Image 1: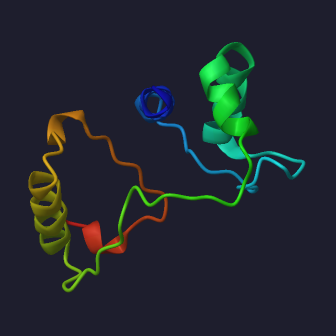
Image 2: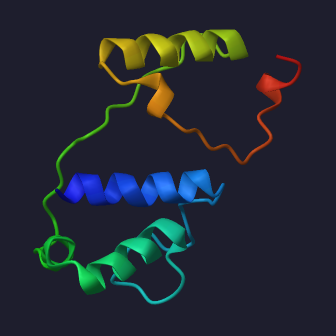
Length: 110
């Protein structure tokens, strides 16, 4: 139920072409936390399930996503690697949205 709420927040931000990250990645710090964490805090005000998760003791983390080495760095190679990974993990590509902010010169012309 928590993951559904978090995915809904991510999809809402992605559909609006909004960045997720902010300058602070820790909710215990003061300041702007970015759109994603700000939305999580907002939803948690009204949702007791998400509030319980935010109030849990810190220090325990589970791995949801692994990191994969890119052996080739061309645009077509990256697309092939990501597509293969998603197929292997049974992730529907039609439900995926990507964001990029650095200009990614490797993608120019492709």
